[in-house]
Length: 484
Image (cartoon, rainbow, N blue to C red; front, side, top):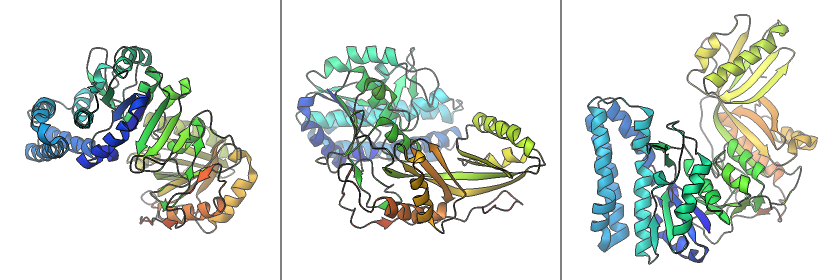
Protein backbone atom coordinates (compact mmCIF):
# COMPACT_ATOMS: atom_id res chain seq x y z
CA UNK A 1 0.00 0.00 0.00
CA UNK A 2 1.04 3.59 -0.63
CA UNK A 3 -0.31 6.91 0.62
CA UNK A 4 -0.82 9.70 -1.93
CA UNK A 5 -1.44 13.17 -0.53
CA UNK A 6 -2.66 15.91 -2.90
CA UNK A 7 -2.51 19.55 -1.80
CA UNK A 8 -4.99 22.32 -2.49
CA UNK A 9 -3.42 23.34 -5.80
CA UNK A 10 -3.63 19.73 -7.04
CA UNK A 11 -7.40 19.56 -6.39
CA UNK A 12 -8.23 23.22 -7.06
CA UNK A 13 -10.79 22.57 -9.82
CA UNK A 14 -12.65 19.87 -11.72
CA UNK A 15 -9.87 19.81 -14.31
CA UNK A 16 -7.22 19.37 -11.63
CA UNK A 17 -9.18 16.58 -9.92
CA UNK A 18 -9.60 14.78 -13.27
CA UNK A 19 -5.81 14.90 -13.62
CA UNK A 20 -5.38 13.54 -10.10
CA UNK A 21 -7.79 10.70 -10.89
CA UNK A 22 -5.60 9.71 -13.83
CA UNK A 23 -2.47 9.69 -11.66
CA UNK A 24 -4.13 7.53 -9.01
CA UNK A 25 -5.61 5.11 -11.56
CA UNK A 26 -2.16 4.52 -13.07
CA UNK A 27 -0.97 3.37 -9.62
CA UNK A 28 -4.01 1.31 -8.74
CA UNK A 29 -2.00 -1.90 -8.33
CA UNK A 30 -0.08 -0.29 -5.44
CA UNK A 31 -3.29 -0.07 -3.38
CA UNK A 32 -3.30 3.73 -2.91
CA UNK A 33 -4.85 5.54 0.03
CA UNK A 34 -5.52 9.14 -1.08
CA UNK A 35 -5.45 12.11 1.32
CA UNK A 36 -6.65 15.46 -0.04
CA UNK A 37 -6.58 19.07 1.10
CA UNK A 38 -9.41 21.56 0.59
CA UNK A 39 -9.87 22.85 -2.95
CA UNK A 40 -7.65 25.86 -3.69
CA UNK A 41 -8.27 28.71 -1.24
CA UNK A 42 -11.38 27.20 0.38
CA UNK A 43 -9.93 27.26 3.92
CA UNK A 44 -9.08 30.95 3.54
CA UNK A 45 -12.66 31.65 2.41
CA UNK A 46 -14.04 29.73 5.39
CA UNK A 47 -11.86 31.78 7.75
CA UNK A 48 -13.14 35.02 6.24
CA UNK A 49 -16.70 33.74 6.43
CA UNK A 50 -16.59 32.86 10.11
CA UNK A 51 -14.95 36.18 11.03
CA UNK A 52 -17.71 38.11 9.25
CA UNK A 53 -20.39 35.99 10.94
CA UNK A 54 -18.76 36.43 14.37
CA UNK A 55 -18.79 40.23 13.89
CA UNK A 56 -22.45 40.18 12.94
CA UNK A 57 -21.76 41.01 9.27
CA UNK A 58 -24.45 38.63 8.08
CA UNK A 59 -24.57 39.89 4.49
CA UNK A 60 -20.78 39.60 3.96
CA UNK A 61 -20.78 36.10 5.47
CA UNK A 62 -23.72 35.06 3.29
CA UNK A 63 -22.03 36.38 0.12
CA UNK A 64 -18.89 34.34 0.85
CA UNK A 65 -21.01 31.30 1.69
CA UNK A 66 -22.92 31.55 -1.57
CA UNK A 67 -19.73 32.05 -3.56
CA UNK A 68 -18.22 28.91 -2.01
CA UNK A 69 -21.42 26.89 -2.49
CA UNK A 70 -21.76 27.89 -6.16
CA UNK A 71 -18.10 27.07 -6.78
CA UNK A 72 -18.39 23.54 -5.35
CA UNK A 73 -21.69 22.85 -7.11
CA UNK A 74 -20.29 24.13 -10.41
CA UNK A 75 -17.14 21.99 -10.13
CA UNK A 76 -19.25 18.97 -9.14
CA UNK A 77 -21.34 19.38 -12.30
CA UNK A 78 -18.23 19.71 -14.46
CA UNK A 79 -16.59 16.73 -12.78
CA UNK A 80 -19.45 14.27 -12.46
CA UNK A 81 -21.68 15.28 -15.42
CA UNK A 82 -24.70 12.95 -15.48
CA UNK A 83 -24.26 11.83 -11.88
CA UNK A 84 -23.74 15.35 -10.54
CA UNK A 85 -27.30 15.99 -9.35
CA UNK A 86 -27.36 12.91 -7.16
CA UNK A 87 -23.83 13.53 -5.85
CA UNK A 88 -24.69 17.13 -4.98
CA UNK A 89 -27.89 16.13 -3.22
CA UNK A 90 -26.34 13.24 -1.28
CA UNK A 91 -22.75 14.38 -0.67
CA UNK A 92 -22.37 18.14 -1.00
CA UNK A 93 -25.67 19.88 -0.22
CA UNK A 94 -26.07 18.38 3.30
CA UNK A 95 -22.64 19.70 4.30
CA UNK A 96 -23.49 23.21 3.10
CA UNK A 97 -26.75 23.08 5.08
CA UNK A 98 -24.75 22.11 8.17
CA UNK A 99 -22.22 24.91 7.55
CA UNK A 100 -25.03 27.42 7.05
CA UNK A 101 -26.54 26.44 10.38
CA UNK A 102 -23.26 27.07 12.21
CA UNK A 103 -22.89 30.49 10.58
CA UNK A 104 -26.44 31.44 11.60
CA UNK A 105 -25.60 30.46 15.19
CA UNK A 106 -22.63 32.84 15.07
CA UNK A 107 -24.68 35.67 13.60
CA UNK A 108 -27.27 35.23 16.33
CA UNK A 109 -24.73 35.65 19.10
CA UNK A 110 -23.05 32.29 19.67
CA UNK A 111 -19.49 32.93 20.83
CA UNK A 112 -16.71 32.03 18.39
CA UNK A 113 -14.82 29.38 20.34
CA UNK A 114 -11.87 27.29 19.08
CA UNK A 115 -14.04 24.17 18.80
CA UNK A 116 -16.62 26.04 16.69
CA UNK A 117 -13.83 27.46 14.52
CA UNK A 118 -12.53 23.95 13.88
CA UNK A 119 -15.99 22.69 13.04
CA UNK A 120 -16.35 25.41 10.38
CA UNK A 121 -12.84 25.09 8.94
CA UNK A 122 -13.23 21.31 8.57
CA UNK A 123 -15.72 21.71 5.72
CA UNK A 124 -13.02 22.34 3.09
CA UNK A 125 -11.56 18.84 3.35
CA UNK A 126 -14.95 17.23 3.98
CA UNK A 127 -16.21 18.68 0.69
CA UNK A 128 -13.12 18.08 -1.44
CA UNK A 129 -12.77 14.43 -0.36
CA UNK A 130 -16.39 13.74 -1.37
CA UNK A 131 -15.82 15.29 -4.82
CA UNK A 132 -12.56 13.42 -5.34
CA UNK A 133 -14.20 10.11 -4.34
CA UNK A 134 -16.99 10.80 -6.85
CA UNK A 135 -14.44 11.54 -9.59
CA UNK A 136 -12.60 8.28 -8.90
CA UNK A 137 -15.84 6.30 -9.14
CA UNK A 138 -16.67 7.97 -12.45
CA UNK A 139 -13.17 7.01 -13.64
CA UNK A 140 -14.07 3.35 -13.07
CA UNK A 141 -12.22 2.83 -9.79
CA UNK A 142 -13.85 1.07 -6.88
CA UNK A 143 -13.69 3.75 -4.18
CA UNK A 144 -14.26 3.97 -0.43
CA UNK A 145 -14.72 7.39 1.18
CA UNK A 146 -13.54 7.53 4.80
CA UNK A 147 -14.40 10.45 7.07
CA UNK A 148 -11.08 11.47 8.65
CA UNK A 149 -12.95 12.39 11.84
CA UNK A 150 -13.74 8.68 12.28
CA UNK A 151 -10.10 7.54 12.19
CA UNK A 152 -7.78 10.42 13.21
CA UNK A 153 -8.06 10.69 17.02
CA UNK A 154 -6.68 13.85 18.63
CA UNK A 155 -6.53 15.69 21.92
CA UNK A 156 -8.78 18.70 22.48
CA UNK A 157 -6.23 21.41 21.58
CA UNK A 158 -8.60 22.93 19.05
CA UNK A 159 -7.12 24.74 15.99
CA UNK A 160 -3.82 22.81 16.35
CA UNK A 161 -4.72 19.47 17.82
CA UNK A 162 -2.12 16.76 18.42
CA UNK A 163 -2.93 13.24 17.23
CA UNK A 164 -3.21 10.38 19.70
CA UNK A 165 -1.07 8.09 17.60
CA UNK A 166 -1.74 4.62 18.96
CA UNK A 167 -5.51 5.08 19.04
CA UNK A 168 -5.35 6.50 15.52
CA UNK A 169 -3.21 3.61 14.26
CA UNK A 170 -5.63 1.07 15.71
CA UNK A 171 -8.56 2.70 13.89
CA UNK A 172 -6.61 3.01 10.64
CA UNK A 173 -5.68 -0.68 10.69
CA UNK A 174 -9.29 -1.73 11.27
CA UNK A 175 -10.80 0.52 8.60
CA UNK A 176 -8.44 2.05 6.03
CA UNK A 177 -5.98 -0.85 5.73
CA UNK A 178 -8.88 -3.29 5.33
CA UNK A 179 -10.74 -1.19 2.74
CA UNK A 180 -7.55 -0.49 0.71
CA UNK A 181 -7.20 -4.18 -0.16
CA UNK A 182 -9.84 -3.94 -2.87
CA UNK A 183 -10.68 -0.24 -3.30
CA UNK A 184 -9.08 3.18 -3.47
CA UNK A 185 -9.59 4.89 -0.12
CA UNK A 186 -10.17 8.68 -0.18
CA UNK A 187 -10.14 10.87 2.93
CA UNK A 188 -9.60 14.50 3.87
CA UNK A 189 -6.42 15.73 5.49
CA UNK A 190 -6.05 18.39 8.19
CA UNK A 191 -8.99 17.19 10.31
CA UNK A 192 -9.68 14.71 13.08
CA UNK A 193 -11.83 14.38 16.18
CA UNK A 194 -11.47 14.02 19.92
CA UNK A 195 -12.37 10.78 21.70
CA UNK A 196 -15.90 12.11 22.22
CA UNK A 197 -16.31 13.05 18.54
CA UNK A 198 -15.69 16.82 18.51
CA UNK A 199 -14.14 17.92 15.22
CA UNK A 200 -10.56 19.24 15.43
CA UNK A 201 -8.02 20.61 12.98
CA UNK A 202 -4.29 19.85 12.96
CA UNK A 203 -3.09 23.36 12.06
CA UNK A 204 -1.77 24.69 8.77
CA UNK A 205 0.03 21.97 6.84
CA UNK A 206 -1.99 19.38 8.72
CA UNK A 207 -2.73 17.35 5.59
CA UNK A 208 0.94 16.29 5.49
CA UNK A 209 0.55 15.10 9.07
CA UNK A 210 -2.57 13.15 8.11
CA UNK A 211 -0.65 11.46 5.30
CA UNK A 212 2.20 10.60 7.66
CA UNK A 213 -0.20 9.19 10.27
CA UNK A 214 -2.04 7.12 7.68
CA UNK A 215 1.25 5.81 6.28
CA UNK A 216 2.43 4.77 9.73
CA UNK A 217 -0.95 3.31 10.68
CA UNK A 218 -1.21 1.04 7.63
CA UNK A 219 2.56 0.36 7.37
CA UNK A 220 2.70 1.88 3.89
CA UNK A 221 5.61 1.20 1.55
CA UNK A 222 5.82 4.88 0.62
CA UNK A 223 4.16 8.24 1.31
CA UNK A 224 3.88 10.47 -1.74
CA UNK A 225 3.33 14.22 -1.28
CA UNK A 226 1.97 15.54 -4.58
CA UNK A 227 2.33 19.29 -4.97
CA UNK A 228 3.00 21.90 -7.68
CA UNK A 229 6.82 21.70 -7.70
CA UNK A 230 9.13 18.98 -9.03
CA UNK A 231 10.50 18.09 -5.59
CA UNK A 232 12.88 19.72 -3.16
CA UNK A 233 14.81 22.31 -5.18
CA UNK A 234 18.19 23.92 -4.74
CA UNK A 235 16.48 27.30 -4.25
CA UNK A 236 13.08 28.61 -3.28
CA UNK A 237 11.07 28.88 -6.55
CA UNK A 238 9.11 31.80 -5.07
CA UNK A 239 12.36 33.79 -5.06
CA UNK A 240 14.52 32.35 -7.86
CA UNK A 241 13.25 30.30 -10.78
CA UNK A 242 15.33 27.52 -12.25
CA UNK A 243 16.78 25.57 -9.35
CA UNK A 244 18.02 22.00 -9.56
CA UNK A 245 15.96 19.12 -8.19
CA UNK A 246 17.45 17.06 -5.39
CA UNK A 247 17.25 13.34 -6.13
CA UNK A 248 17.17 12.43 -2.44
CA UNK A 249 17.64 13.86 1.06
CA UNK A 250 17.71 12.33 4.49
CA UNK A 251 14.92 13.12 6.92
CA UNK A 252 16.94 15.66 8.93
CA UNK A 253 17.92 17.70 5.87
CA UNK A 254 14.36 17.74 4.52
CA UNK A 255 12.89 18.84 7.82
CA UNK A 256 15.53 21.56 8.10
CA UNK A 257 14.58 22.87 4.66
CA UNK A 258 10.94 22.88 5.75
CA UNK A 259 11.64 24.55 9.09
CA UNK A 260 13.56 27.35 7.38
CA UNK A 261 10.83 28.28 4.94
CA UNK A 262 10.34 25.74 2.13
CA UNK A 263 6.70 24.75 1.54
CA UNK A 264 7.16 21.26 0.08
CA UNK A 265 7.04 19.41 3.41
CA UNK A 266 5.51 20.82 6.56
CA UNK A 267 7.80 20.88 9.63
CA UNK A 268 7.12 18.31 12.35
CA UNK A 269 4.49 16.48 10.32
CA UNK A 270 6.75 13.70 9.10
CA UNK A 271 7.50 12.29 12.57
CA UNK A 272 5.15 9.26 12.33
CA UNK A 273 6.73 8.24 9.01
CA UNK A 274 10.27 8.90 10.26
CA UNK A 275 9.76 6.68 13.31
CA UNK A 276 8.86 3.77 11.05
CA UNK A 277 11.42 4.56 8.35
CA UNK A 278 8.80 5.04 5.63
CA UNK A 279 10.23 6.95 2.64
CA UNK A 280 8.47 10.19 1.68
CA UNK A 281 8.55 11.28 -1.96
CA UNK A 282 7.82 14.87 -3.05
CA UNK A 283 6.33 14.86 -6.57
CA UNK A 284 4.71 17.26 -9.01
CA UNK A 285 1.08 16.47 -9.88
CA UNK A 286 1.52 18.46 -13.13
CA UNK A 287 4.51 16.34 -14.17
CA UNK A 288 3.70 12.88 -12.77
CA UNK A 289 6.42 11.14 -14.80
CA UNK A 290 9.19 12.95 -12.88
CA UNK A 291 10.60 10.87 -10.04
CA UNK A 292 10.64 13.81 -7.59
CA UNK A 293 12.74 13.91 -4.42
CA UNK A 294 12.86 10.92 -2.07
CA UNK A 295 13.28 11.65 1.62
CA UNK A 296 14.42 8.77 3.78
CA UNK A 297 17.18 6.70 5.30
CA UNK A 298 18.51 5.54 1.92
CA UNK A 299 19.44 9.03 0.74
CA UNK A 300 23.01 9.53 -0.38
CA UNK A 301 24.98 10.79 2.64
CA UNK A 302 27.24 13.70 1.69
CA UNK A 303 28.81 15.99 4.28
CA UNK A 304 29.80 19.58 3.56
CA UNK A 305 27.66 19.90 0.41
CA UNK A 306 25.06 22.68 0.21
CA UNK A 307 21.85 20.99 -0.90
CA UNK A 308 19.33 23.83 -0.87
CA UNK A 309 18.78 27.54 -0.16
CA UNK A 310 15.64 28.26 1.87
CA UNK A 311 13.98 31.60 2.63
CA UNK A 312 11.98 32.49 5.72
CA UNK A 313 10.19 35.79 5.24
CA UNK A 314 8.64 38.18 7.77
CA UNK A 315 11.24 38.08 10.52
CA UNK A 316 12.72 40.89 12.60
CA UNK A 317 16.25 41.45 13.90
CA UNK A 318 16.37 42.79 17.46
CA UNK A 319 19.58 44.58 18.54
CA UNK A 320 20.32 45.12 22.25
CA UNK A 321 23.30 47.09 23.49
CA UNK A 322 24.38 48.12 27.00
CA UNK A 323 27.50 49.26 28.79
CA UNK A 324 26.69 46.99 31.72
CA UNK A 325 27.63 43.69 30.12
CA UNK A 326 26.89 41.80 33.31
CA UNK A 327 23.20 42.38 32.64
CA UNK A 328 23.24 40.65 29.26
CA UNK A 329 22.84 37.07 30.46
CA UNK A 330 19.80 37.91 32.58
CA UNK A 331 18.28 40.03 29.80
CA UNK A 332 18.86 37.23 27.29
CA UNK A 333 17.17 34.63 29.50
CA UNK A 334 14.28 37.00 30.18
CA UNK A 335 13.82 37.73 26.49
CA UNK A 336 13.84 34.04 25.59
CA UNK A 337 11.09 33.41 28.15
CA UNK A 338 9.17 36.46 26.91
CA UNK A 339 9.27 35.31 23.28
CA UNK A 340 8.25 31.77 24.23
CA UNK A 341 5.28 32.94 26.33
CA UNK A 342 4.05 35.08 23.43
CA UNK A 343 4.64 32.34 20.84
CA UNK A 344 7.27 34.33 18.95
CA UNK A 345 9.75 31.96 17.33
CA UNK A 346 13.47 32.65 17.86
CA UNK A 347 15.87 31.64 15.07
CA UNK A 348 19.30 33.17 15.68
CA UNK A 349 20.95 34.48 18.85
CA UNK A 350 24.37 36.18 18.93
CA UNK A 351 26.29 37.88 21.72
CA UNK A 352 29.40 40.06 21.57
CA UNK A 353 31.19 42.52 23.84
CA UNK A 354 28.67 45.29 23.24
CA UNK A 355 25.34 43.49 23.28
CA UNK A 356 23.12 40.84 21.74
CA UNK A 357 21.11 40.22 18.62
CA UNK A 358 18.04 38.05 18.08
CA UNK A 359 16.32 37.05 14.86
CA UNK A 360 12.66 36.35 15.63
CA UNK A 361 9.36 35.87 13.82
CA UNK A 362 7.78 39.27 13.35
CA UNK A 363 4.78 39.92 15.57
CA UNK A 364 2.51 42.96 16.06
CA UNK A 365 3.28 42.63 19.79
CA UNK A 366 7.03 42.87 19.34
CA UNK A 367 7.47 46.62 19.80
CA UNK A 368 5.25 46.73 22.88
CA UNK A 369 7.02 43.79 24.50
CA UNK A 370 10.49 45.29 23.97
CA UNK A 371 9.52 48.66 25.41
CA UNK A 372 9.20 46.99 28.82
CA UNK A 373 12.90 46.06 28.97
CA UNK A 374 15.42 47.61 31.36
CA UNK A 375 15.90 51.29 30.50
CA UNK A 376 19.70 50.87 30.52
CA UNK A 377 19.43 48.75 27.37
CA UNK A 378 19.36 50.48 23.96
CA UNK A 379 17.06 48.71 21.51
CA UNK A 380 16.67 48.84 17.75
CA UNK A 381 14.75 46.58 15.41
CA UNK A 382 15.02 45.82 11.71
CA UNK A 383 11.45 44.77 11.00
CA UNK A 384 11.37 44.11 7.25
CA UNK A 385 13.85 41.24 7.29
CA UNK A 386 14.19 37.66 6.12
CA UNK A 387 16.37 34.62 6.78
CA UNK A 388 18.25 33.12 3.84
CA UNK A 389 19.64 29.72 4.81
CA UNK A 390 22.09 27.25 3.28
CA UNK A 391 21.20 23.64 4.12
CA UNK A 392 23.20 20.43 3.94
CA UNK A 393 24.64 17.89 6.36
CA UNK A 394 27.85 19.08 8.03
CA UNK A 395 28.06 22.47 6.32
CA UNK A 396 28.27 24.46 9.58
CA UNK A 397 31.47 22.61 10.50
CA UNK A 398 32.98 23.26 7.06
CA UNK A 399 34.60 26.75 7.36
CA UNK A 400 34.93 27.13 3.60
CA UNK A 401 31.14 27.21 3.21
CA UNK A 402 30.80 30.31 5.40
CA UNK A 403 33.76 31.97 3.70
CA UNK A 404 32.35 31.38 0.22
CA UNK A 405 28.88 32.53 1.27
CA UNK A 406 30.15 35.75 2.85
CA UNK A 407 32.21 36.56 -0.22
CA UNK A 408 29.29 35.81 -2.55
CA UNK A 409 26.87 38.05 -0.62
CA UNK A 410 29.28 40.97 -0.98
CA UNK A 411 27.38 44.25 -0.62
CA UNK A 412 24.16 42.64 0.66
CA UNK A 413 23.45 43.99 4.17
CA UNK A 414 23.74 41.01 6.55
CA UNK A 415 22.43 41.87 10.01
CA UNK A 416 23.30 38.43 11.42
CA UNK A 417 25.07 35.32 10.16
CA UNK A 418 25.25 32.16 12.19
CA UNK A 419 24.88 28.37 12.03
CA UNK A 420 21.36 27.33 13.04
CA UNK A 421 22.37 23.69 13.46
CA UNK A 422 24.96 21.22 12.18
CA UNK A 423 23.18 21.25 8.81
CA UNK A 424 22.32 24.91 8.21
CA UNK A 425 23.85 28.39 8.10
CA UNK A 426 21.48 31.38 8.12
CA UNK A 427 21.85 35.02 7.11
CA UNK A 428 19.44 37.75 8.22
CA UNK A 429 19.04 40.22 5.35
CA UNK A 430 16.55 42.98 4.44
CA UNK A 431 13.45 41.65 2.68
CA UNK A 432 14.23 43.93 -0.26
CA UNK A 433 17.56 42.14 -0.83
CA UNK A 434 16.36 38.52 -0.57
CA UNK A 435 16.25 37.90 -4.33
CA UNK A 436 19.76 39.30 -4.81
CA UNK A 437 21.12 37.28 -1.88
CA UNK A 438 19.61 34.02 -3.14
CA UNK A 439 20.78 34.59 -6.70
CA UNK A 440 24.36 35.24 -5.57
CA UNK A 441 24.46 32.25 -3.23
CA UNK A 442 22.95 29.97 -5.86
CA UNK A 443 25.49 31.10 -8.43
CA UNK A 444 28.30 30.40 -5.95
CA UNK A 445 27.25 26.95 -4.74
CA UNK A 446 25.54 25.49 -7.80
CA UNK A 447 27.92 26.31 -10.64
CA UNK A 448 28.55 22.61 -11.33
CA UNK A 449 26.07 20.51 -9.33
CA UNK A 450 26.91 16.84 -8.80
CA UNK A 451 24.60 14.86 -11.15
CA UNK A 452 24.40 12.04 -8.60
CA UNK A 453 22.80 14.46 -6.12
CA UNK A 454 20.97 16.91 -8.40
CA UNK A 455 18.86 16.64 -11.53
CA UNK A 456 18.33 19.47 -14.02
CA UNK A 457 14.87 21.01 -14.34
CA UNK A 458 13.41 22.65 -17.46
CA UNK A 459 14.19 26.07 -15.99
CA UNK A 460 17.71 25.29 -14.72
CA UNK A 461 19.27 26.91 -17.74
CA UNK A 462 17.57 30.25 -17.19
CA UNK A 463 17.60 31.35 -13.59
CA UNK A 464 15.52 34.48 -13.12
CA UNK A 465 15.27 36.23 -9.74
CA UNK A 466 11.74 37.03 -8.57
CA UNK A 467 12.20 40.59 -7.37
CA UNK A 468 10.33 41.41 -4.17
CA UNK A 469 9.50 45.01 -3.39
CA UNK A 470 9.62 45.88 0.30
CA UNK A 471 9.85 48.92 2.47
CA UNK A 472 13.33 49.37 3.95
CA UNK A 473 13.66 48.13 7.55
CA UNK A 474 12.04 50.37 10.11
CA UNK A 475 13.02 50.60 13.76
CA UNK A 476 10.80 51.09 16.77
CA UNK A 477 9.20 54.50 17.01
CA UNK A 478 11.92 56.97 17.85
CA UNK A 479 14.71 54.39 17.60
CA UNK A 480 17.12 54.20 14.65
CA UNK A 481 17.81 50.96 12.86
CA UNK A 482 21.28 49.67 13.64
CA UNK A 483 23.37 48.87 10.55
CA UNK A 484 26.11 46.49 11.58
